Every structure is written in structure tokens, then in C-alpha cells.
Amino acid sequence: MQKSKIKDSIQKLPNLPGVYLFKDKDNLVLYVGKAINLKKRVNSYFDKQTKEARVTLLLNEASKIDFESVNSEIEALLLEAKLIKAYRPKYNIILKDDKRYLYLGITKELFPRVFLLRQPEKDVALLDWFGPFPSAGSLKEVFRLLRRIYPFRTCKNLPQKTCLYYELKLCPGVCQYPNRREYRKTITRIRKFMNGKINLLIKNTNKEMSQAVKILNFEEAQRLKIQIQSTENIIGNFKRMPESEAINHQLTWIRRILIQYQGIETLFIHRLEAYDVSNLGHKIIVGSMVVFINGEPANSEYRQFNIRAKNGGDCEGIKEILRRRFNNRNWLLPQLILIDGGKPQVSAAFAVLSSHNYQKEIALLGLVKGNETVVIPVIDRNRLVGWKLIEKSSKTVGLSILQHARDEAHRFAQRYYHKLSHKLSKKSLFGLLGENKNRRS
Image (cartoon, rainbow, N blue to C red):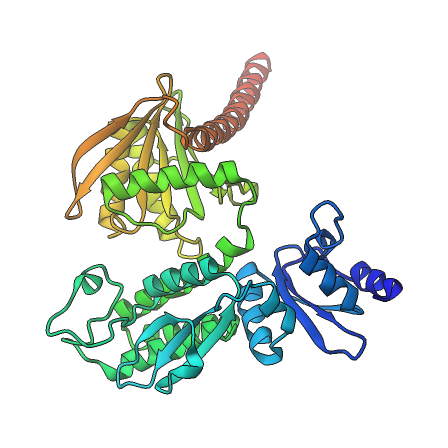
């Protein structure tokens, strides 16, 4: 291995997501890998304490390292698969321990089936296939996320009637409701996504949405808007995937209680929004929205609200904030909303979610100060039918994230309240001084 060339290669690596390629002296690709941070990942190969024998073989043969940076981890994942398919690097096979890689395949049928497989070369009925993917878990996650955005058929043989996947909106039900034109569009979008043309996909869908608005097809425009937002959410989720196992563990706990009590199966909690109302008097009532991305605060997305209705209390304040929030179509939708409060405040929030038909898309929780009880509205058939209260204990592993978000919302609301209160006091003082001056003159 020519150490000087390798060192020069590493120096050029950015701290960005992307794909790296180990090459030999003849410029032959030996190994392709992906990384969230290219420089950090490649440097790890030279850690003597963790180096394996087979990695040593790769490094001894490598002469240089090339790279291609991208905008997100998911784009790195898709590019890695494309490059492995193109170059078939020998060390990708050796380092796999002779296990077969996983692929995503699309059949040539009238209504193509989308499924995962391990030997695409043996399936002559494929319209297209993508891979190989070294990380089977990552591909399965992409498969699940894509299916929620672009519902597709996975069954080998079309059934006589619609199945559970149709009821869960994971399949368009082509067995009973065939719409070849729309389904072909879905397959085209999936192929663009898997080819890594995600920005082009979003751009084209935006054009379709604008066209739908022009012809007053607002229902179709809304459907396309949700697809765009969901696709952008996937990119954001992979781009800022948390490295902390503790955060992952806590978010998993939250996901489980949402599935259990609300029937909302969110595959990830990428965006959490927490709300609070600061109501210390009738003259000033304010509210706040704080945003957590993958369990961590995203300060640039915090928002403040000066409540217009001064006589409604916290519940009316929550309703006003959420209405104004949902009227802003430029903000990405969250997977979870957290309310600082108990049943009355959470009920108010649920009323707004229902009025916007988000009650099955956006999960909802409350958190009561003092006893730190998690308040979970139990949802059945789009209606609030009861409550589940989870008291603070050693088993509430996701409580710390909820507390952090709730406390941030409270702090941000208080800060805004004191700012407006100071302005009002200043204004009153100047008014009083002016009045006294007029009296003296």
C-alpha cells in the first residue's frame, strides 16, 4: 500500500455523507462503502485496535481512496448499491462472509409486484431491480417507508378480495380496484427513488401538484403534497439519524405506546413538536411550538404565538396555536405532538387534529407537570374513546425526551411572555409619564 497516496486521499475526505471507494494501483475498485461522515468512517479503517485480518488484506492492496459526497444518508445507501452493482468489488463479497446480499425487485406484470429478493439474476420476470444492499436492515427500512408513501402490491398471486394491506393503506388494492395508469405512476416514482433521483422525484411531484391545483383538483393536490412531505421526511430521517443508542431506545419506547394505545404505527419519530400556553393574565396570553428532530432540539424551527383570543384559557389557546400551525402549509408535518398539560388540553388538541383529518396520521400525547404523568388519548375509529395514564417509573424509558421537549416549550413560552410583558410595562410607564407632564403644564 502506498501510504502517501492513502494519506492524501484521506485528507481530501469531507465530513459529509457519501460513498468511498478503495482502489488498487491499477485503479480497479476493491471495495465500496457508505458513511454518514466520510472522513470519520474511512479513518476508522486505520484504527489498529479494531482492525480485522480481512480489513488488513484490503488495506494492503489499496493504493488510493476516492469518494462521492451526497446530501443524506439514504442517498449514500442508494449510491453504494448502484456502485457495487456496477463494479462488483471483490472485497465487498469477502467482507460479507459469503452471505447473499439483499435486492429490491419489480416484476414485469400488468400491476408489478415490488418485493425483496436475494438472487435477481435467476428471476427472468423482473422489470427492474436495485442492489445489492450490504445492509439488509437499511433496505428493509426503506422498503417499509416507501410502501407507506407509495402503496404497492407485494403478493405473489392476486387474491380474490382485498387483504389487510389494503385496509392499512399499504396496497392500492389492484386486485379489486385496478387503475393501471395511477399504478404505473407509482412504480415510476419508486424506480426514481431507488435510482437515487430523489430531488428529481420531488421536483416532478411538485409540478403535478401545481397542475392539480390549476384544474381545481384539490384532493389530488393534497395527496401529492403529503407524498412530497413524506419523501422529504425520509431524507431528513436518514440524514440526521441519531448516533446515541439511548435516544434510539427512548424513541422506540414512545413508538410502542403510540401503536398500542392509538393504533398509529409510525416507523420513526423524526419530528416531534411540543406546545405550551403561558397564561398569566388576560392582557397577554402566548404560546410556543418547539421542534425536536430525532430526539434532539432544532432551535431554528421554534415558533412563538401571540394568542388573539384572550378569554378562552389554555384549551382555547392550544386550539388557536394548532389551527395557525396547520394553516402554514410550508411546515413539515410531525409524527408526534406533545402538549404541556393533561386531559383538557390534550382533548383540545385532538379536536383540532380531527378537524384537519390528522387524527390517524399524527400521534398525540400530554405530559402533566409535577407527577410527570404521560397522558395518552386512546383512539378508536378516529374517535377519542378513553385515556391511558402512564405514571413515572423505571419503565418509562422515553420520559426524558418528553420532559425535555415539554420543558423547552414552557421555557420558550415564558421567554416570549416576559418579552411582551416588558414592552407593555414600558408602554404604560411612558403613558403615565406623559400624562403627568400634561398635568404639570
